[in-house]
Image (cartoon, rainbow, N blue to C red; front, side, top):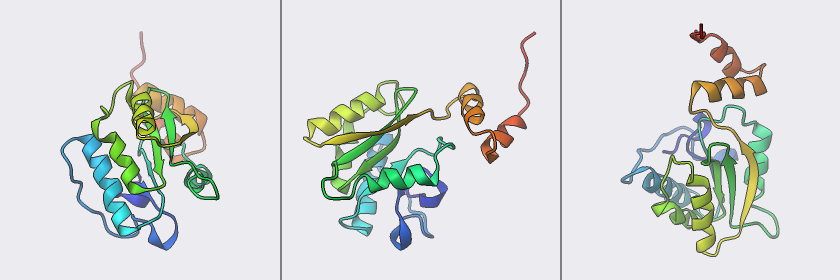
Length: 170
């Protein structure tokens, strides 16, 4: 799951970033278990550092927002976790101050309209203090892609979307 710079895996900053060179095989039975394992594996490689996992279907994510999201887990009184809600009820980012906090997701159904709210509840049920990140739309459908592309018109994503032939209604 660790894809670092290519998206989808836990993000790291600077020389210790998990995606700096080598991918690692996913492990775990089911998506939630793979997320938990990715955090555990990254935590083992970078003990004591916060982890921010982002969805690879948020092309409007900027380096500035990514950095700010990870920075929220530092400082003098950081939350235990940060969660970025997706417009479809899921989430686009999960950040944890300690890798073991992600174990809360083990029983959360993924890829549903309730994944975001159930993730938040699971984190809070473990006594974790969770702060929200800005809400964003992720791209699951062509309609989503069109909306996101309109929000970032000068991007490679928008250019790629414009090149896709769309069947017009008659």
